[in-house]
Length: 117
Image 1 (tube, rainbow, N blue to C red):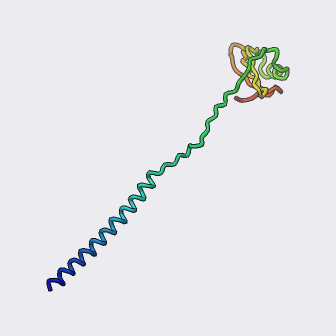
Image 2 (cartoon, rainbow, N blue to C red):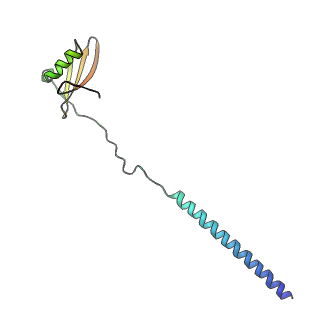
Image 3 (cartoon, rainbow, N blue to C red):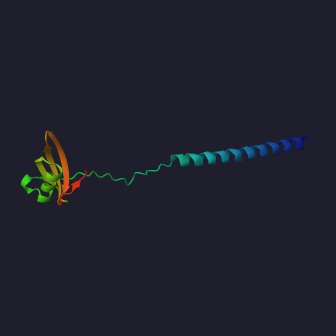
C-alpha cells in the first residue's frame, strides 16, 4: 500500500511539474514575443530629403530691367526708385526699391507681374 501512495504522489508531482513547466514556457514565449516586437524600430524618415530653395540672383543695372517692370513700378508704386536690381535663371526680377523714405524688396516676372516670395 505504501507503494501505491508513493506512486500516486509521484504522479501528482509529475503532473503539477508538467503543468508548471508548460505555463512557464508559454509565459516565456509570450514575453519573448513582446520583447522582439518592442525592439523592432521603424525609421520612417529614411528617405527624407530636405531641399533648400536658395535662388541665385545675378545683379544687373537698373537700365537692364525690362520696360514692363519699370512701367508696373511707376503705375503701382508711384515715386519709387530702383536701388538695386537682380535676375535669376527663371527670368524673375528682384528689385530693391525706395518709396519715399522706406526701402523694400519687390519681385516681378519679365512681364511686369508682381510675385509673392
